[in-house]
Amino acid sequence: MPLIRSKQTEKSINGISTQVVCTEFSNYIFIVLTQYGKIGTLVSVTPDSRSGDISTSMFTTKVLLGKEEALTHVCAKNLATFVSQEAGNRPVLLGLALKDSSIEAIKAMKDVIKSCQVW
Image (cartoon, rainbow, N blue to C red; front, side):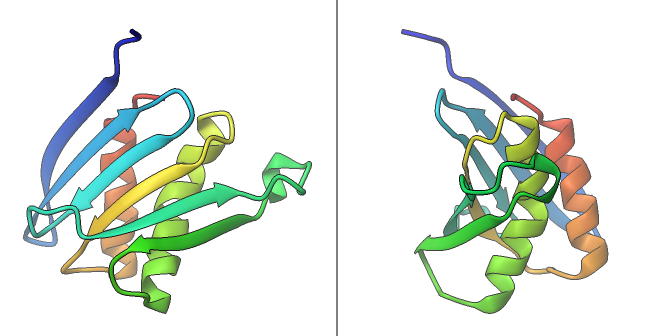
């Protein structure tokens, strides 16, 4: 049984306590990003296999659990695309529960995700 690698951290982003947990599974990366202490909306971010060039690869986002909102897809793409690309194009499963989804907050969250790199 291979060991599952997981890292977590907590950081204040715009005054809001934000927790991140990144876990690596063999076929995908699971990231929870919460400002409410719960998993929230579950979104899959999957690279489009038809696109051969990684630098221009397209990503499909799909809400698996939770509320279907345009902003959720935008946040998920912004937060998870670089993870998938760095993780050999593995899909990313993202749990999002955000109070602040401003552009500055999302940028700061990307840095927090990078600090929990397990891929």
